[in-house]
Each structure stands twice: as C-alpha cells, then as structure tokens.
Image (cartoon, rainbow, N blue to C red; front, side, top):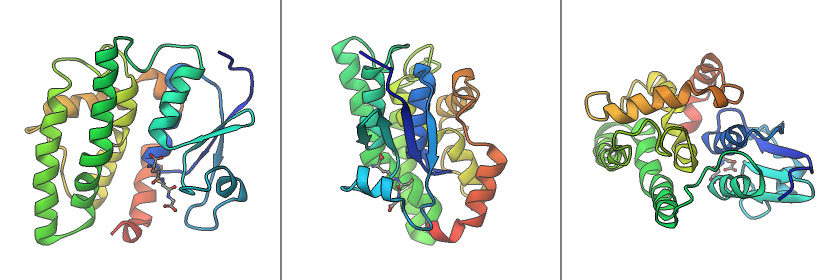
Length: 221
Ligand code: GSH
C-alpha cells in the first residue's frame, strides 16, 4: 500500500457522484486536489482522455493511474490508502454493503430523481416507487447511526445523494420524497451524515448548492 503519489479528483460542483469520491477521500483522510469540470461547457481533454468510456466525473487520478465510476472509485480509495476502513471486514457484511450500494445505484436513484424532475401522474408513480424503495433502505439502518455503524462507511458514501442533495433538491423542486413521517431513520441519518466532522471540508456549501439547482432547474427536467 502506498499513498505517496499525488491524488487528484476530476469533479463537478453539485455532482453527488463526484461527492462520493470526495467523501471516501475525506473519510480515509487522504489529501487531494480538486480539478473542477464545467460539464455545461466543454469537457476537458484530461477528462476525455482519462474516462474515454463514460466521459463522466468523477475520475480519481492516483499518480499515473486513473479510476472512474464513483462506487469503483470509493472501493479503490478504501483499498489503496490507510485510514479507517469503509467496507466492513466481515465477508457477508461486505457483500451486503455492496448489495445495498448496487440497490441505491440501480433501483432507487432513478425513481428518486425522476419524482423531482417530472410532473403529474408520472411524478406520482415515481414518488410511490421511491417511497417503497426508501422503506427497504430505511430497514438497513436498524437502529444504527450510519449504515456503516458508528461512523460512515461505503454504503453511507453510496447514499450521499440522500444527504444534503435531497433536502436542497426538495426545496428547489417543492417535492418531498424523503419524509420524516415515513422514513425517520433516513432523515436522522441525513442530518448526521451532513454534519459529520470528517466530511465538513468536502460538503458543498448549502447556499451554493441551492443557487446551483435553482439556476439549472430546467436542465434537469
Ligand atoms: N455511474 C457514474 C458514476 O457513478 O460515477 C455516473 C456519473 C455521472 O453521471 N456524472 C455526471 C457527469 O459526469 C455528473 S453528476 N455527466 C456528464 C455527462 O453525462 O456527459
């Protein structure tokens, strides 16, 4: 294990995917340089060169190596650097953390975001689906403060969009998908995660995030 080569992260302000990589770096205590893209303008040559397959952020640069896809990046960070482990050590618990991260990625994300971006009947359908899926995720907290237990881990990182993003998007779109009465554990988790000391340096400023989504509302519809 070596953490000697410099670490850089190609990211975009307001991206919950890029934030997953930042959160993993912050939780492991790895210093990094942020290279911010303008995704509404022209993508940098560096991004296109290092992530030619998806051409998306985040891309982690560790020395002369590049890794993309936020959940892959989070696992790489966990393995390549010293610091508190993000994935559980027990093989079954590790498998479960990956299972639920995949659930967030491939089942929950679409209805969760679509419930905000569309209107009418379509919104009702995505809202209902999102609420049901959130109930399944809620059960994973099982009285724990974080999905990772006493401190945030890999699954918390995967769920980052349910932290500060959720409340900001809900405020801008005037739609409430994550509800205190339906999902009190996730709501408490969102407050604890958003206030976690180790993550303070990398969380986007709430006012700036609000301004960003207010300004770019139409792009997401
Ligand atoms: N599955 C990818 C991951 O987990 O890293 C999704 C990343 C993603 O969608 N990134 C967005 C992006 O780079 C920013 S939030 N979009 C540029 C594009 O779609 O061309």
